[in-house]
Length: 91
Image (cartoon, rainbow, N blue to C red; front, side, top):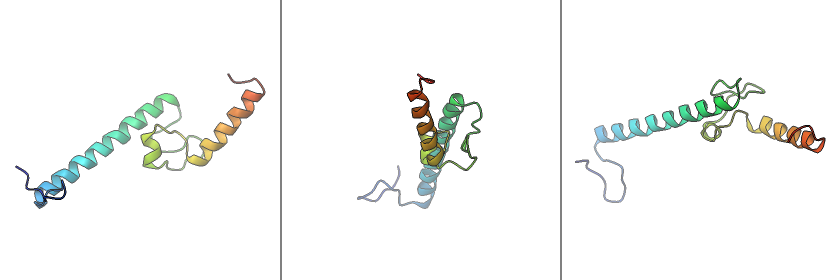
């Protein structure tokens, strides 16, 4: 049984703490991987971590949401889509 502090779910034993840290790290890595795979299916040039337009690293929080562009490039992309829609070139 894991020895835990009464006011937190954090183990007090260093070995249990390390195991919990490892579990959380592994889960986060798996989430990033799955988000990257999902995003790569949306854009053929996406490598799993860099913006498809400018090449900078995409923050982990954006990758969790299947982003393939950095915030600035996504904004530019959306403005371009709006412009093309007004011209009737994109549905």
